[in-house]
Image (cartoon, rainbow, N blue to C red):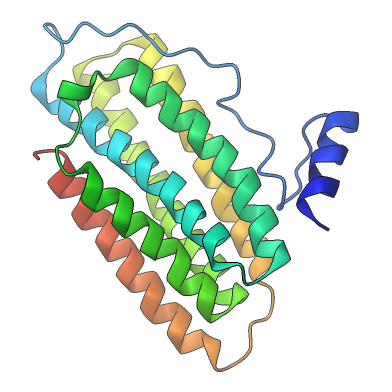
Length: 212
């Protein structure tokens, strides 16, 4: 199935749970909340800064996959899921003015592009394994973040947005794992290594992005 077929199916039938489509998206139609930074605990602001960084990286991961030009199925997946991640990023950029964001955005963008391009150049199953692992970690990141904000700054509109984005990340992880299939034996150790590196880099990036 190519990207045009995916798009056509969505326009005729509405969102479907197709791993190549990126749909359904829980964040579609969610509006960004108006935040009072003067009343917001610094810890919550740091969390939002890290998540803005993460959504920037997510868009760049899919940019790297599209640039790899390796596989039509990967490209269709990357284009459709990138559209969802771009919406997430748009929501965060509407919430966080530039002076509240990480100062290392150039580094995050470059790292995200490489995180998508490299596994995509190796093999489709490696790419889908890495995406599945990273998105599963992002799901746990948002779960912890939502619990912290519910306790320290229970803004219902902010929580609604974060819960919708978390649902999308879980969907993306499921989509990637479903497309991974039965990979060739030689790709399995490579996939395990790159999954560990990608999740470790994500964890480190969030830790740094909160502060810088």
